[in-house]
Amino acid sequence: MAIDDIAEGGLSNDSLVVVPNGLTATKDKLLPASLQSTGISETTALTKADTLALRNKHISNSCTVFFHENPLKIVRAQRQYMYDENGIEYLDCINNVAHVGHCHPKVVAAAANQLAQQCTNSRFLHDNMVLCAQKIASTMPEQLSVVFFVNSGSEANDLAIRLSRHYTGHKDVVILDHAYHGTTITTTDISPHKWHHLKDYKQKKWVHVAPQPDAYRGMFRSPEHTDADLGRLYAGEVEKITDRIAKEGRGVGLFLAESLQSCAGQVFLPEGYLKPVYEAVRSTGGLCLADEVQTGFGRIGTHYWAFQEQGVIPDFVTIGKSMGNGFPVAALVTTPEIAGTFVKMGIEYFNSVKHS
Image (cartoon, rainbow, N blue to C red; front, side):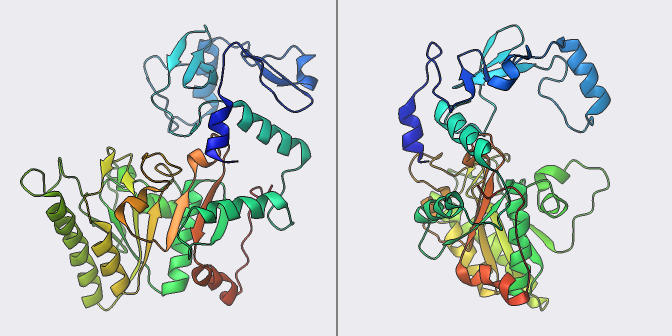
C-alpha cells in the first residue's frame, strides 16, 4: 500500500471507519464482533493503580515507562492524538512508528483483512510477499533488489552483520558514536547509545567507534568550518580507523550508520560525508549499511530514503518501525550477490511470520 494512497484516506473523529466484515468500528472502539457480545471494551476494567501494580509485578523493571513518577495510561490513539483512561487527549510527539497516524483506517483494514485470511511463514508462496518486496525494491537503487523480511529493525541489522561476515570474511565493524542499531546481543554491542552509561561495560575489540559527525557539538563545528569541510574532516576520522585496521592485517566487515542519527539527537550528517567514508570502508573489502529504520519512507521530506541525500549507494538498507505503522514488520534490502552468500554456504533463512 503506497503512502500516498493511505494519506488520501484522511481521518475524522466523527466518522465510521470502513473495515472488513466481522469488525465494527467507531471513533471509540474497533473490536471483532465475537468480542462485542462478551462486554469487552477497548479499555480494561483495571484502574491505573492496578495496571501499574501488575506491570511492576509481571513486567521487568528494565522495560521503562515514560514519565516515571506519573506514567500515562494510554487506552487508544487516533491520528496524531493519544487518549488516557479518562479520555484526556494528548498530542503525540514521542512515537516514531505511526508513520501515517495512529489507527489509520486503511492500515487497520489491510491488517485485519490479512489476519482474517492467514499469517504464516515465508516458506509458502503468497502474492503479498513478492509484491511488497517488488514495491520496496522499486524505491531503491537498481542493484538493491533482494529483500529479507524480518520482525524488527534490530533483527534486520543483526542479519546484515551476519551476512557481511560471511561475504567479506571480516568481523570488524565501524559505527558512529552515540549510535543506536538495536537490542539483540550483537546490535547492542554496536550501539554506544545503549552501553555508554553501563557500569563496567567493555567495548568489543571488533567494534570501532568513529566520532559523531555533529556540526553543533562535535569535535569539528560550524561556523569554524564550512559544510563541505565538515564532511571531509569527519570522514577523515573514519579513514583513520580503516587505515589502522588494514595496518593490523585485517579488513572492515561492515560500516553502519543511520542516514540521520535519531536517538543520538536528530543529527544530520554533514554534506559530502558518506561518499569518502564508503570509499575508505570499501578499500579494505568492507560493506556499507544505511540504517533507515527511523528515517526512511519519506520522513526527511526531500527524499524517500535519507541516504539519497548524501548521493551514495549502500550495500545494505535496513528498514522497520514505520514500515508497518505499528505492526512488527521490518526488512533488510541488499544486492543479489550479497544475498547469494547464504545460498553458496548452504544456509537456509526463513522468517516465521513475515510472509503474508
